[in-house]
Image (cartoon, rainbow, N blue to C red; front, side):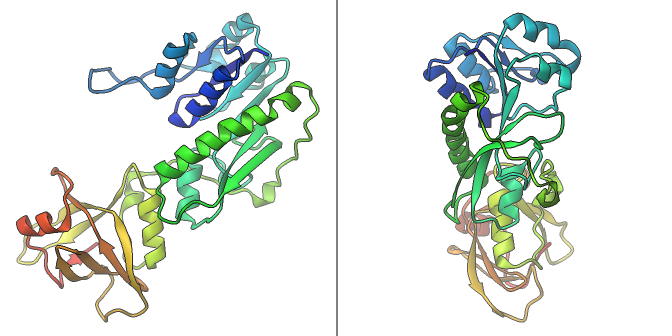
Length: 315
């Protein structure tokens, strides 16, 4: 079976490699064009490096729906596999392939349809995460579900750790179900749209910590905002000094319940072991600090150069 792969982000790489290692013919990788000037310090995207390693030709049109049908027909592939590509496909593109197309998505559908399913699931406090293999239709992550796999991540795992695990699981799920897809015998189940929720891209300002949230919500914010935009607050300094933007993390739960009568966001204690800050229902311990324009540092070195003290405010 000949399979065209469409993928841009790192989530697609394990599936791409597993297809090739399993002996499937991949005549073309379709990926989004590189929009920034490349330098020695900015490596090629991982999926492009994998394509070069396996000798798979790369096709990167600006608009696959406008420009790609003729090229894809010329490849003569049976099936399209799309994962982490970044564009909704037109019916014409999907119709190029005799077996249609399948999509690997990083959530247990119909929940978290969209560009940031893993981050959004973590932010929502989900304890079970998973991947779904679905048929492609011209709508965002809404096709019938072929198969799902799931697991319960460690509550300390951040989004990149979970994404890596789910990407590997997704590659295995794809291989396990290609046979029935090729045979046209899969019993895909339509999604219940009434249970669907969206998972839009993360915006930078979402990394700002609202200290009125519960300690678990703040902890999940830290986990879900990695590797970008991370979690941050503005340190309101005394004496009329201008505020300082601080990237904060790791963040740990130091206690729950009414730990103090201080307003939310108040620094309760600051020493080498960490910076304790009042949250909505307990206390958060900050174990790393990066002032704007500076390197990340542990609390001890940070406090040696920046005179944060109990009573200061983060907001």
